Length: 331
Image 1 (tube, rainbow, N blue to C red):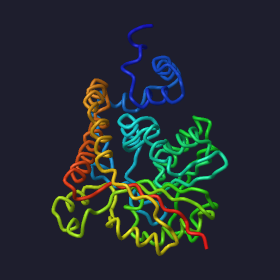
Image 2 (image 1 turned 120 degrees about the horizontal axis):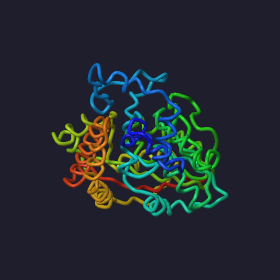
Image 3 (image 1 turned 90 degrees about the horizontal axis):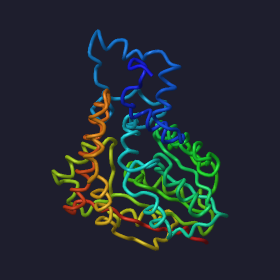
Image 4 (image 1 turned 60 degrees about the vertical axis):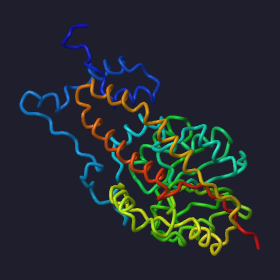
């Protein structure tokens, strides 16, 4: 093969595609080079520098969504970086082993159906479906995550076992059916009307159903006024509405739940963050060695800053990260 036809260093997006689909990355690059014309970026390179891609995390808003929701902070670059950091199909701390461990309180079986709010890219849903045989429907308010997660479920042969669906909270009946189990993963803190959501979830739970909640909570009444908390909240990609755990327990009680477990997992959660980001320098070095990947390096830095602020707030005791198990009360 001549030097003119030999593929350059393989772009990250192509490497991820090869990884997902089980191909050799170099062979896939050669096929694309053979069958595709030079990209517009390559043709224009000699004329003018290519402007860096600005992601939502760098302050550029995406187009307005069709429904009345916050601007979707997820784009292709951030989704790629999230999986490089957290693992395939994940966009936050805790891989498959952590998901299985934290979900054992739900006593899942193959006969059960489950709803996962805040499903991300569907990694946790697919993990639980594989580990316990449960049928999991993941719900997300990010159309980007739904699209990417649905593709991952299809690639894994789990389009029916662990599908993802768009969640429209303005709908009077946002959930498709009734479920045996519900997991709400770092999602309540994004919802202002928590009582309304938990009422909808309670209506969708079968008798004797269980609901597992993991999320951030205010440590005390003074947290909201603390400068560190205000700075953190302003830097988050989406608006947050945190409450004290006592407030949520009162909401759950009034909505027909009985709280069985309330665990403070802050230290464990910070450890997961620290362990994962300890290897981020290797990811940055690899990206910087590849032409045209500077925009992904920028996203890595933004993500690092985001998670560093979250971890610091947890360490300083301004917020907590908790696991709550609530059972639907039977009459």
